[in-house]
Image (cartoon, rainbow, N blue to C red; front, side):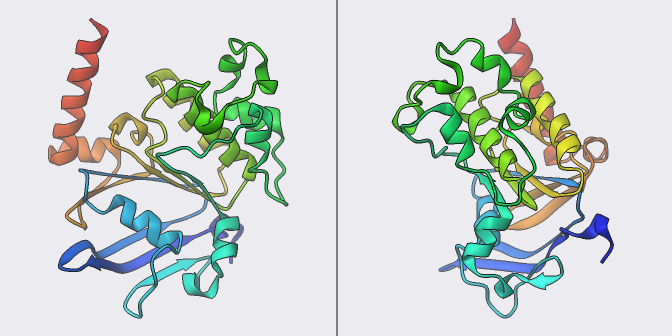
Length: 253
């Protein structure tokens, strides 16, 4: 397999139901290494279900086809999936240890990324200048000593230092400002240009620079394309983007 396709992820006709509720309906996605895919949609549209399916939190049935490196996902153990995926959830898992320890917990066995570089790529450097004890600061259980944005940036630094083939940011940029968000996305393109990246978001500026944005509605793909292509279609994505931009403008007044 060509190097640029080494960490290819594909899902074909993925369906998942909970009783009579269809969370995913024949969902298809294909991501080459170095690409960033955005997943957006209203609450309950199926975004989290897809992520949990990838993380093997739900059983894979015979009709679902998910592949990593062109191998079926059930070829891998749950432990190996955890090693291959760096996952930043909406609810950040921080521990009552130093900031440095919290980041280094994520370092993978084969990672070539050091602590300072991960911090820089997560745009977390500026925060450390204003935290009294810097990297030695004890986070406190659940990160009570940090702001929401600082928790997110610390968690992203921990994911980046893992240097995993697949990175999933699950609404993990919601508490950062627009400039920081743009910096992190730009850094992802630099540091992970041979890896697979998925960004799940409610704030659409977080996916604006993605190679493709997928809009989910009731478990199905309702729109897909680049930011410019979706804006030109003037569908759900366009409407939500305009609403969010108007809200941001009001907040700045």
